[in-house]
Figure (spheres, one colour):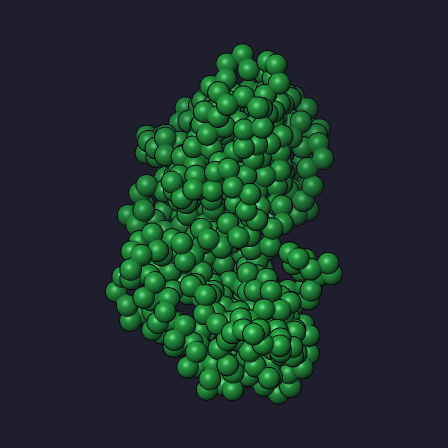
Length: 585
């Protein structure tokens, strides 16, 4: 005889093992044993905080408490315990938990636990970072404010299966400042190493009704996986794992949980006559929110060229939008809880808008204090110093020396990173070592021609090497896929056109360009002068003088421009332009 269901309002805790599928793929026997162990230890902590473990389901645990404060205390305490436990292990199978806490109704009948409260806690848990704890506002509001917890308001979130949005908080401990930073995408220990954003590319759906087109949709998917795998800043799930979901109708957030990824790319292919339509979208797997979407309509005149073209265009867009999403998350974090990766994202954002940002420089240095072997941070700091002469107008020897130290350190740490190769090229270009600049920029392009920073730096280096058409090509490609601002590339276009003698095209870049650096007025002055528009050239010099930073050495900057040119006639073109504009050199 069935027992009468028992219904009560309780505080529910739902925990799962982040990236459990990836851990099982490493070693199924060890992984399942570790899951049982982590939940056994967590159950002990739950009991110590007046809670009751109701059920353990493979890679998930459900518990109930009478008070939200007990649930949060147990969750935060165990996240610290578990991280310390994992630090003592020597392999890669290190279970990290995500925990959600909510108030709701629980139904217990025939040894089965159900109820909307458990589903709500599970949905909230999916918003937590690995090693993190998220709490529903209704539970948060019942807790005394004197407790040693800190809460970050994540705002109202739309949860699957719930009509109304739910306000969510991320919990941390005041005493330790610990929010449970993720140890890695598949549970690996970081020892301060930066976390890579993880991404899965699901098989594109063949919507054409033609089974023979299946190879085309699969080919698009495989090309995207292959090309995205070139990005050293991304962790890309292998083809076999992604294709396990082919033909299945599964919620993206659930796929993200199973594969242990932050982002998912999905799409479809539809053929009609001699035309083909391909759609692609990037989804945040933790929330189900769409971050980017695009549609491509192409002729089938050469289907394989179409396949390559579309895959390339998708690949150039996705990493930039992943960076934006991760940077927004990093901006929400308190400084004391930031990883080296978070600091790098913040620093890059600062210098994208202000190349000489002192705050950006400090953030790069903080990232290296956390992880001195963080190659990408060394590379970005090198680039910051390489352009110091143009930003500050003095100290060329000091800035170049610092740039070389960080660029060459980055190269030793990770020579296969295309951004590092491109950064070293830009640094060598700055000091006039043109053969080395050419070698490293070509190496960067070979490693990944779709990397955003490679495109941008290839434009500049190629211009100063005298390959003006290639410089414009790379500037165009970078500008089309720039996730921040098209203004970022106006200088690259301007210098490429100037060096190529296309002065009118160079001046077109000034139209609508807001808040550019003061030294752009100097470039404009030289350009006007080459067109014998001397009055406008001198007006540009006057504009520069109004904004001239303290200590700016105009001659030193002009000489730096000339030294960067591989062709003597290009270097003389800079000097000549400034002289015509009335600058004494």
